[in-house]
Structures are given as C-alpha cells and as structure tokens.
Image 1 (tube, rainbow, N blue to C red):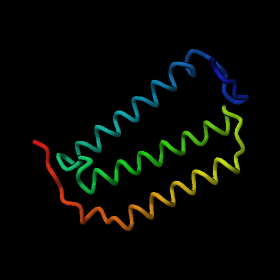
Image 2: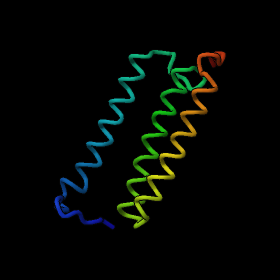
Image 3: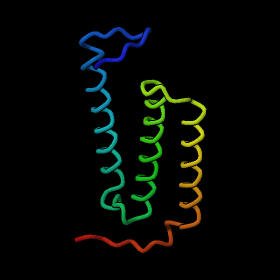
Image 4: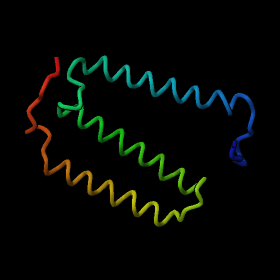
Length: 107
C-alpha cells in the first residue's frame, strides 16, 4: 500500500527511486564511517557504542514520525515518549561513561 502525500506524486521514480536513493546514501555513509574509524568501530568499543546509540536514536525518530503520519497516533504523546526515551538513554550513556568500558577486541 502506498500512502499519498499531497506534495509528492506516486510515480515510479518516487515509489522505487526514493527508497533506493535512501538505501544508497545510508549504505555509503556506513561504509564511509567504517573506513574512517577502521577497526575501532565495534560495539564493544566506546566509539561503536556511541554510533549504535546515535543510530538507535535516529531510528526511533523515524519510527515516531511514522506513528504520527501513517499510524494516526497523537503527535503529543509520541513526541513525549520519544523525548523521554531519548533523555533516559542519554542519562544512562552519561553515567556509564563508555570511555571506562574495557575495549574487548574479538579475533
């Protein structure tokens, strides 16, 4: 099912092209980050944990937008829950201090 947006016509370019472009940009970004950070981008390292949290926060934002636009949920409640979860995550991240986590390198 394709949802209709008034300012975006449902053509073959928008139905197939935009998702393909989104995938290509995300994949290129992930490969670029991996190339720049080299072997230190693992979840067991502080940099990897930071990237995972950033990705999770971004994905949560996309999910919140989806719930409001396509799911019909109240924007106030979805925003409140998203902000609460994000603040709790940031506080947890702040108090855990990922720099104190021992980097365990998997062979």
